[in-house]
Length: 267
Image 1: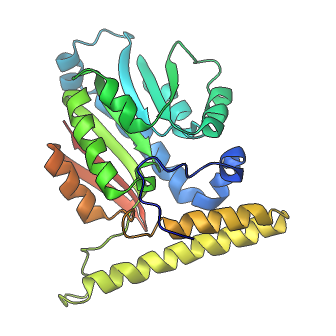
Image 2 (image 1 turned 90 degrees about the vertical axis):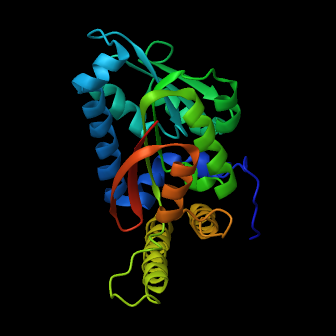
């Protein structure tokens, strides 16, 4: 198991991508809850009078939004159901993942949803400035190196219209929290919590997939979860906020449970 720091590493090739519908067992109920939170926040944002006025939005008129990392399209499908007029341009560089998305979104393809098999940075670089009204992304950016994430944020700041929403759900460490007041304990507390949650996920994966005789998925998911913590890739809440501010985003807010974090920010 070596540390691959490339920005376009294919992390869901093979059995992980082919059987990604089973990932619900890995991420657990908290991830599902936060995906719904992302969709509700999108709906709230586009229902706001100031958003509709800025966009010149006519009732039911289509408007473009970009999703980075469509995956199995769980979030995409739910978002389309609660945000009328939204047209999702979904990007994923994994053909196996897009196959799941195409099946789930069959009734919306090429009308309310357009899918692109492409590296997300490549897609963003090809877009004109001010193309999209919002971006949402769930459990995607932690698969990139921090350097690549910074470039993604820079490109998003360019392709989003002024005032547009960026909302992201991902697994992030909580370094910077300091529950005991001792200036030395914050990082240690965060690392301990991160370790315990990652270990719980590995135990859940091992138990569930072993019971189903899927030892191949046990090995693949354990490898995936362990490499999430590599220094070049490890996603940290405080660092993510700094990277967003560095790219020009503002007015961020968020919520969390364990390592599941939602961050909302604005162009």
